[in-house]
Image (tube, rainbow, N blue to C red; front, top):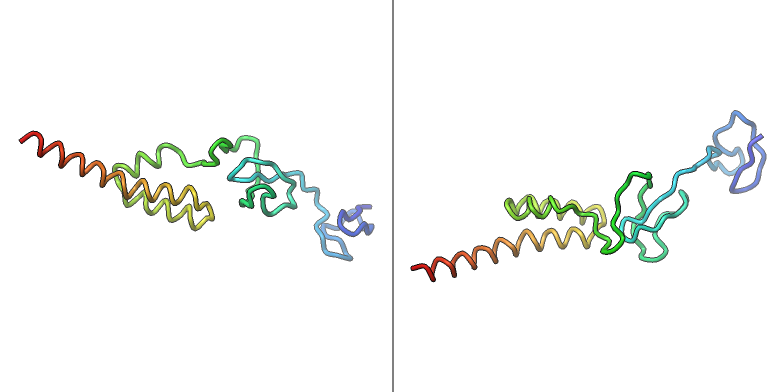
Length: 129
């Protein structure tokens, strides 16, 4: 007999859901991780208690940085430097996923770095002749 973890009702071994409260009787051994601060939670948690960040299913081989909270790879900034419109699109995707800090930093980088490079290029060209 399986016992429901929510209501404590006994259910038959062949059941996947509790007959009384419809809670899943399958053992959930996976954990969730906060994508911003890296804290682990049980599979039942929905939001991080510390930073109110979104939780993702955690697998042991997942990579999350906990020092700055950012999981944007360096390659995105390199691509954004050479093709700013790609950086803006990727930033919008991050914002749509609820990762506002990463998305905003990528958009700002994609907009301002080419402007700064262009200004330095103009200054260098005017000094050369």
